[in-house]
Structures are given as C-alpha cells and as structure tokens.
Amino acid sequence: MTDYDVIVIGAGNAGLTSAAYLTQKGVKVLVLERHNVPGGSATSFCRGRFEFEVSLHQICGIGTEKAPGPLRNLFERIGVLDKLEFLEMNDLYNFLYLPEKRSITLPPDIGEIAALLQGLFPKEKEAIKAYLELVTKVAYGVISVQYLQDPDASKDKYPEYFKYALKNTQEVLDRFFKDPILKSVLGAYWGYLGVPPDRLGFSDLALMFRAYCDFKPQHFKGGSQALSNAIADAILENGGSIRYNCGAEKIIMKNGAVQGVMTQTGDEITSRFVISNSSKISTYYELMDPEDVPEPIKAELRQTTVAMSSFVLYLGFNAEPRDVGFIESTNFMVGSIDNEMAYKRMKALDINENDFAAISCYDLIDPQFSPPATCQAMALALKYADPWLKVPPAQYADTKYQCAESFLNVLDNFFPNIRNHIEEIEIATPLTFMRYLGTPGGTFYGFDNFIKDSEMFLPNDSKVPGLYNAGCWVGMPGYQPTLESGVRTAKSIVKELNA
Ligand SMILES: Cc1cc2nc3c(=O)[nH]c(=O)nc-3n(C[C@H](O)[C@H](O)[C@H](O)COP(=O)(O)OP(=O)(O)OC[C@H]3O[C@@H](n4cnc5c(N)ncnc54)[C@H](O)[C@@H]3O)c2cc1C
Image 1 (tube, rainbow, N blue to C red):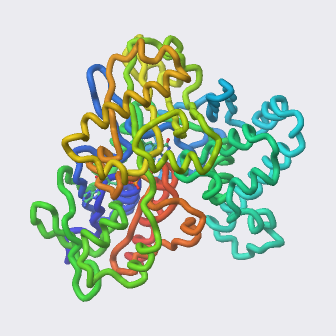
Image 2: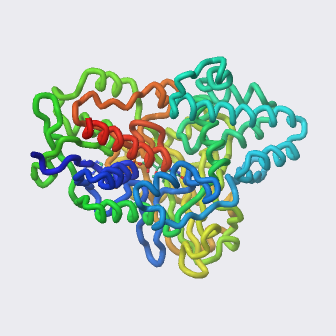
C-alpha cells in the first residue's frame, strides 16, 4: 500500500493537467511544487498597481464554441471549462520591419492572409496561394500521421507531408518566394519555436501557423495565472493534494523501479507512479542517482542541447495602449532578416536592433487587463543563458540595467512614445528564469527545437518503470502542447492502473 497512486513533481501546465485528469478518474494524487504558486511559466506577479503576465503572448488550440479546438475539450474533461473566460485576438501578429519602417498585420484567417499578402506582393500572387495550400497540407499531415497515427499513412496518402515535413523552413520559403520580406513575414512564428527558419523543421512552422489560423490566437481573462489557479482548484475539488514551497529532492527507487519521492524537507512519500514535470536534465541528473539512469536516456541527453531563454521587460504604463503606440496586441519587431544574424544575436548578451523581439499588449483585447487608464506590455528578446552565466555576480545588476536600457532604445524605434509613459518596469534575464522555473539555462522550451531533435524522433519513454515525464522536455514547447502532454501522460498511467 503506497501513500499515493501518483506523485506529480512540478505544477507547470503539464503537471497540473496530468494531476487534474487523474483526480477526475479517482486516482489518488499528490502534486509537489517548489514555488509558492501553481503554473510554472503560466503565472503572474505584482509590482505597484500592475499584475504582470509572465509568459503568455498567445495560446493556440482553444477554438470557438462553434468550432472547438482540442484544448476546449481538454478543459471540459478536466473540469475547468466553465471557470475560464477566453479572450480572442484580432490579429495573428503584426510584423514590424525596422529597416523599411514597415508594418504588416496578418489577420487570424488563412484566406484573409492570402488576400492581404497577394495585394502587398502582387508579383508573388500564385506562390502565396500555393505556399498556404502547402502549409495546410503539411499541418494536417502532422496531425494525421504523428498525432492520430493513421495506420495507413504513406507517401501516396500524404505526399506533401512526406516531402516537406523535415525540410528546413528557410529552404521551403526560398523555393516559393523571391521577396525576402515576404519570406520573413510568413516565417515570423519561428520566434515561438526558438530556432531561426534555416534550423527549424517546416512541419513545426506549418502546424503552428495553420493551428493559430484555425483556432485563433487567444488569452485568458485574468491572464495565465487564472488558468493555473483554475486547474489547481479542480485538482483539490476532486480530492487531490498540492504542496507548495515543497520541492522534490529525490525520486526513490527500488530494484530499478519508482517507489516514491523524497521532498526537500526530507519527507519520504511512497507512490506507484511519479510524473516529472521538471526538466528532463534535472529529473535524471539531480533527482536520480547515476546508476539508476538508463543508458538510452544518457545517450539522448548527450545529443540534445538546451533551448534558449529570454531577456524580458515587464512594462506598466500610465496611459491607454494607443497613447503608448500599441495598435495590435502581438508585435514581432524585426531588425534583420538574416538567419545567421538572428542566431548570433540569441547567443549574445547585449541587445540591439538586430535581435528578434516580440512585444504584447493585452489591454487591447481586454481593457480591464490592467487598472483603468493604464496598460501593460511584455517585451521579450530571445537569448541563451550562456553569456549571462559568465557575468560576475557583482556586475549582474549593472549588466541587467544596461541591457534593459538598450532594449528600451530598440523599442523606441518601433514605439517612439514608449518611455514617456512607463510607470513600472521589471526585468527578467535568463538567470531570473533559471531561479523561478528551476530549468537549465532558464529555458521554458525544453531542448533546442532543431530538425534532428524534432518531436517525431524523441519518443516519450522514461525507460524507468513507474516514471513518466510530461511537459516541454518531451514534446513541443508552448501552452497547447504542454497542457496536452500532461493529459497524454495521465492517460498512459490510467491504462497501466487498469491493466
Ligand atoms: C516569457 C515567456 C513567454 C512565453 N510565451 C508563450 C506564448 O506566447 N505561447 C505559448 O504557447 N507558450 C509561451 N511560452 C512557453 C510556455 O510558457 C512553456 O513552454 C510552458 O508553460 C512550459 O510548461 P511545462 O509544463 O513544461 O512546465 P514549466 O512551466 O517549466 O513548469 C515546471 C514546474 O515544475 C516545477 N519544478 C521543477 N523542478 C521541481 C522539483 N524538483 N520539485 C518541485 N517542483 C519542481 C517548477 O517550479 C515549475 O513550476 C512562454 C514562456 C515564457 C517564460
């Protein structure tokens, strides 16, 4: 007899949905979370009169009541659908290209995107039509072949998927288009996948682009913390337990199988199964003894690399969005369309106009997101942690403020009014994310999403009886994939419990 059927390490998106699904099925679950709130990246914090959204620019997969997406069904299954209010965004994204002072806003509809781009780039009219058709076919191929595992999948049935899924995105864009700006506009979602188009598998970009068009980019009333709180409440209502400020220190093993977890305070709690929502590196190299880590996992961890983190400014303004200069909620700020430059800048510590950066203002979709007559924005530049790890502790604060100043100079180029209205500002470096998420390099994307490390090559098998992994380390990063990953993992455990 064990204390719990399942112990979940970590209350990020995947940890929470796995626990919620299991408690719905009557499984006895304990969630251990080292932080004092649920959510992992899906959280908020307060400064002055602002509650800042930590992470979510856009969530995909919810869909509408009439055309529900997979997440709407998932939320219903785990009992939180009626606790959430969804906010639909009007734009897919606004592409701001600095050298030409150009702004192109894509609507969240594939037909409207085609019409808009064909008007702006008339010489490429046919190519735009053909490319968007290809995006659709490859995206649906990913769903049928990889997710639904069509037993009859073949080159004849899904020719575009088999031909293009593993091509690099830049190669596909180059094959279709001549205009470099058009290529960059259509490839801009690479920022959500963490590697530039010449290193990114086309199936990942196609799936994301088409899914955001189908299900519409959305947010939550109350931000991502409202989502995390709702799922945590559902776990408790169904008889599950959650301990905050209670990290897992060790996965207890006996004869090569999981026996439970020892907490950081030394409590030994037994369970039949453990789900780790912690990083895969921490799971195998910190929570387990080296002799318990199976060889194939060691080999897998040797050949993967940790994805980027970010330098983020959380900005509270004493003005309405339009007075600050925000017209669209999601903006990609592009100084250079050179992939090599983009990748080089991700590895640099400083910030300049050649960094690929994004800024989101949520008050455009929910005027009550911030207090009356104010608004907030989250500005993010993609950055690896390595240069930050070399900054001597005594120079950390100065370095952080200098980078914030440089980032504000970059933002000034796109939103000239931005400095005039800042009331609150908080800065997060990759080291901040390391501290709060406990991930190597402060990443929130798991492993680098290079083509060789694509989801289809990384089967989610822990190789340890009783141990399951869930979250961005065992699949695509982002809200939809991690929320789904938790439920997928929970289903596997229910199957094993019923076997
Ligand atoms: C700034 C930023 C912007 C983003 N923008 C978007 C976006 O617009 N759209 C999108 O889809 N995605 C976005 N993401 C990515 C998305 O938030 C993440 O990929 C996703 O939330 C990761 O979820 P996860 O379940 O893998 O776990 P995580 O969020 O990493 O949570 C893991 C949890 O486990 C806990 N934990 C770890 N080790 C232990 C331990 N030993 N004991 C107990 N607890 C432990 C951690 O404290 C944490 O709470 C963004 C992320 C950030 C940070």
